[in-house]
Length: 455
Ligand SMILES: C[S@@+](CC[C@H](N)C(=O)[O-])C[C@H]1O[C@@H](n2cnc3c(N)ncnc32)[C@H](O)[C@@H]1O
Image (tube, rainbow, N blue to C red):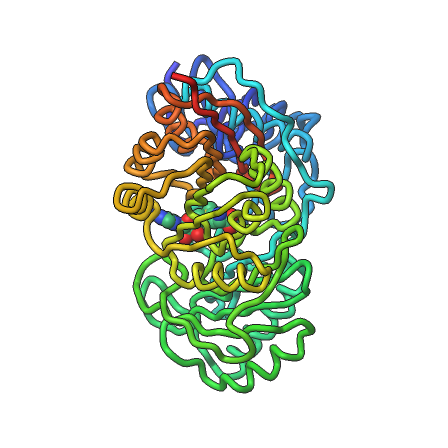
């Protein structure tokens, strides 16, 4: 039977898609429904129809699934930040394991995989140490901040997200209050006019230090001194900066930074290593789970103290410094120069001397150092962004033939694609573990350990 837009169907939700949407079938026609939970019987309206499948919007939950829970956040359905808050946490973890397994099997071609049990959180809220809040206006012209609704740029007002720290609200109240007082306009992406684009906040879980970075479509904020004074009343305020981004694009941060008050970084720690983190640097957002994740990376690296290691996509040297405590020498590569400044400083403040950091693209630095300078590796660790590793990098790894490769991934689809190349002949997939770094969302972090085959 053929279905059309606006048709209303009753569906039993039998599966869950990679973005957390419920999947049901009617006469062989597959329907993906956002906010429907596996086990629900629902009524859905078709919003887009193709020949054999379509997308529906959830109209009514006729019979709720035993896995359905009341979301802890009252705006969970509108807000794009969380996708699966209506699913019990236990089922969220099962969904994530299944997602990784599915990608490794379908894309990577790995069958009958043994995966270690997923590492979840005891308290899966208030875990984020960083948030970036867009600023805009509602239809009454009031300045608002919060999060974008799923797949749109319309802001759902929320200053008190349950995934973030409670200090976020104090900072947002302060900045929005300042904008109202001095009639400062939020940036409007349709006209390119207005000043304040985003408010970025970082919090050190172990140090209670707070960083505020205002992203502006301009160089200066009116009455900067007054804002600094009121922000400094928030306990823990450590760093206040302005980031300039005048480009009409969706990228949040520009390259230009100006310190308004305090230090240009905050400090936090993971395990026994302290890290300085600047506004432009990547730092894992869930510090509790990061310790578990890095523990796995270290375990899979199998270090005895004699190994030479490359840590590619090293950010501020977080994994490099973890590894350096058990390796002979570690070299890190990262594209963001400020992150490498942090990495070098981090090595210094931790008294770690057996490390060296390179600024550049991993796919360019690694072949250059190997071909020209003959620097080899016993172990290579990669932790790329979602798009995964560049093919040139994978080919260099195959040429260098390290004993072990540890791949830390935030996107199991690109992980599976890259593993297919690495494991075509030379490497064997030995260990796989998953960590829930982002409870209530569909994201999951994976660490795999590869061992070179004797061929
Ligand atoms: C997922 S983060 C991992 C950072 C670090 N390993 C950590 O755990 O904090 C990926 C990092 O890769 C960097 N990056 C992106 N493309 C890169 C490239 N082609 N070469 C080197 N680094 C890159 C990003 O700036 C970011 O710091």
